[in-house]
Image (tube, rainbow, N blue to C red; front, side, top):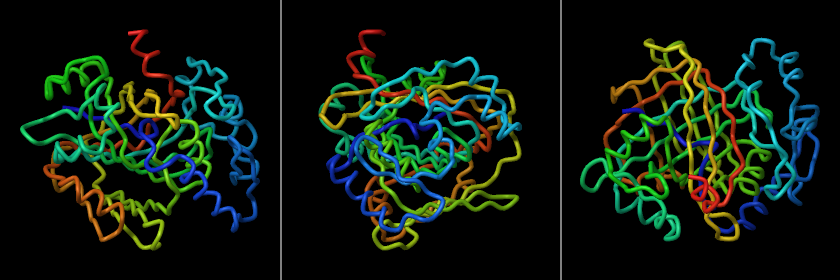
Length: 336
């Protein structure tokens, strides 16, 4: 059984839209040298001066990428076409992520609790997949986007694995079907990031539950560790410590991750990302993942899910993404 995660690519706003955006604007007081302030949907956002976003606003010419990072394989991106979109600000879709890595841990969780965290309108369209009585699945993914249209940043996604809109929820059977189709559906619960550019674009343009906090990545020859800090206390909140796997595949593989959520007007929307995995491996060994929770806010939230058995661990040190702008769910269903 293979589970992909839904990171850059799924969610519903937590709290009110206005409060989330305003909270990030307070961080502009200490903008460092080497940053420019730009407008995104009416919100001032610091970006890296001379970075890809500062120069190209998500429409980076591939020849620029080739010149700056000749080691990046651009063959897949050359087959994709960007279009101009209005997602609360002027942008281009899909957004390209050229060089990235991730780790994903899929756990069982309390099914009733998962259902309680999804809005009623969303539950009418998708439901958490039940793997056995009373237990659903959540995917915890840590992403590092080393080089992308939005410069570079880290992101942590906590997602519920769900059914597909317009289809029956058959639990494990639905999960097997998604695996065979390489098309995975989810509902993102939490999505902290460590740059204001990623936060504002995600909240305004993609209806994602993002907030700004410190996220650190450290590696040894044997391990990958992420530390997520509490944005209020400044203390380490969640630690994800995982093993690097030796048994790896380098055969490129495409998969699609889709999400269903609500936009800032309360309308059902859906979006998706296509991932091209270049090096990847997986394990079901519980010793491959060590999750440490504290008394911070994200830890408390995760404890409430009553996480259980590790179903799958994925180590993906090299992959690429094309992230598409969300559309009304009715538009997607009409095209099916």
